[in-house]
Image 1: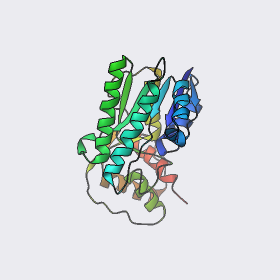
Image 2: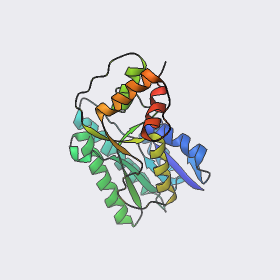
Image 3: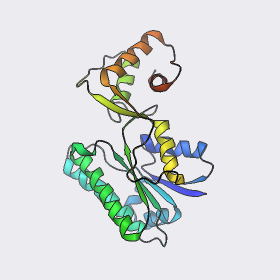
Image 4: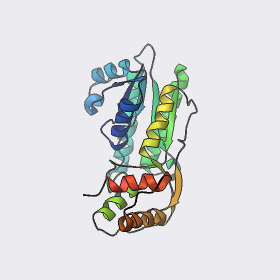
Length: 240
């Protein structure tokens, strides 16, 4: 059994990943996480010592003070590595970053620098780590106006509002269940590439997403498969 903990277990991806592993991964034993563990070195050390694998999702994604955001995210990495350093056999750390690292705002910089710090720490100790370079993630459970423009558009169409396209760019998307499956493959050791970009994503224009949502609202017929089916399931979860 691979004893696995998920920091940020209460967030959109953390909640979905915990449920997926609980239901679909018989070789994984979940070690419950509490968000106040980062405030207690003893509790954090105990949690880390119990884990063979830690998926590090916890972090601040938005704040008006970008320097504070960067500082908080780097401090979480530092605390996790400090706790892992107390273990006779440190756990595999799977770090959640983003394909948007090159954008260079302070959030994306915290992801890049957190990844580099974990890689350097792992190299010094001859341990393993993998960073998941996640595209924009969508699916049931995502918070409108926060997690993804897809969740915002789904909520707005489902409640009779009119979404506005700020920039009709091409975006790379991955469905939450597909992302969970990919993370599970890393947990099992099927994927050792570092960094690793999950498979199963699609690239679409923002306007194409909205056109599909309007079609769902008008027609109501579930598509057979592929991205339209996954988008429909996401949209349907927002209907009041």
